[in-house]
Length: 88
View 1 (cartoon, rainbow, N blue to C red):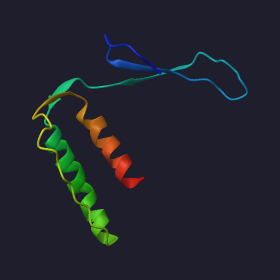
View 2 (cartoon, rainbow, N blue to C red):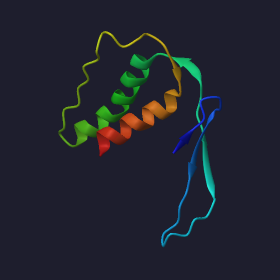
View 3 (cartoon, helix red, strand yellow):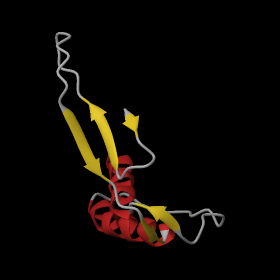
């Protein structure tokens, strides 16, 4: 995985099975915007809470008070990562 700090892209070179070295490249655009991480975490958990309650699962969050009030990054990707971690 190559990360170019001067770019909005993460470039992942894909290697195919059987040692075929094809130089196909997959690029994912990441946002670089200011967002409130606590708000994203809270919204993501509240979205999943209903589904958890249907399955009689208690879903709680405990947010570290030292999380900065604002970050620069991709709030949508953060939400996706949280969902993937919780559902997995």
